[in-house]
Image (cartoon, rainbow, N blue to C red; front, side):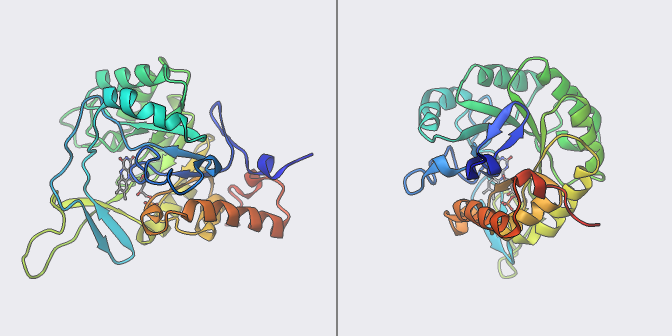
Amino acid sequence: MVTTQDKLQVKIGNLELKNPVILASGTCGFGSEIKDFADTGKLGGIVTKTITLTKREGNPPPRVFETTGGLLNSIGLDNDGFKNFVFEKVSGLEKLRTTVIASIAGNTVGEFVKLVTGLSGIPVVGAIELNLSCPNVIHKGTRFNLLSQDEKAVKKIISKLRGITQKTLIAKLSPNVTDIKKIARAAETAGIDAISLINTYPGLAADIHTMKPRLGGVTGGLSGPAIKPLALKCVWDVYRSVGVPIIGAGGIMTWEDAVEFMICGAAVVQVGTANFVNPKAPFEITEGIKKYMKAKKIKSVKDIVGTLKA
Ligand SMILES: Cc1cc2nc3c(=O)[nH]c(=O)nc-3n(C[C@H](O)[C@H](O)[C@H](O)COP(=O)(O)O)c2cc1C
């Protein structure tokens, strides 16, 4: 007998998710933001805040600013580093009863290697999401400032990391590129298990009275409903270019948004900014997807993926 649970199951790499709705990096801490009032066991998974090898203070305040239909943030990867993650956070993650995806970023190839090696030995970590919106650690000084803008660098770093871990590896891409399809194909060739997109769009907001930027870091990343159509295009473009599953994100606030991402090619969806507006959003999204499937007599959530009639 096929249960509701089976209908919602999704596989990425060697990882089985109980449903396709997961929390996006940087918007749920280490599960801390929701675990006290919601049953995290009902989530498909959570992606941790990006972890770096050593502690980072992050950018000066203010770090967030609300814009029309979106949120600008300039957190600057503030986190307490890998050792703190191991000693302070891992036990909490074990209590969440959902799949944990660790997000990481490095300043050097060696840092990436140390992080992936360390995380590979932690059973509660089901997968590793490489936040490639970090400085180009392979080809320093090229015109490509970010790793995720340089397809050769993406290939090199993923090939290296693929060789040292059995864990499911996910590449999270920035939309701030000329052709996201090329970057996605480079990641696939190097052996990535899934592609996560998108990270935030670069943006700026200014106060017309003080002439000061709204963010301490001057520029920041734009997320939320304002970027949804842009994110959907990235998902659709990449869906037609690679064979690995896509994890879609960018302005998903409701179950209708989530289904739209799936139709355009996302096998899994990440909910980010919505968590700050309505922390119950990911749970409501999962329930909404279930009702949609029932109404449309869809047997498996996989049958929705890439069904855009274009
Ligand atoms: C406050 C804030 C912090 C974020 N921090 C991270 C981070 O540490 N690592 C990362 O890969 N993405 C980070 N993101 C990006 C989100 O994970 C997500 O890719 C992006 O916000 C688009 O989804 P959304 O529109 O649903 O928020 C952050 C986003 C926000 C709003």
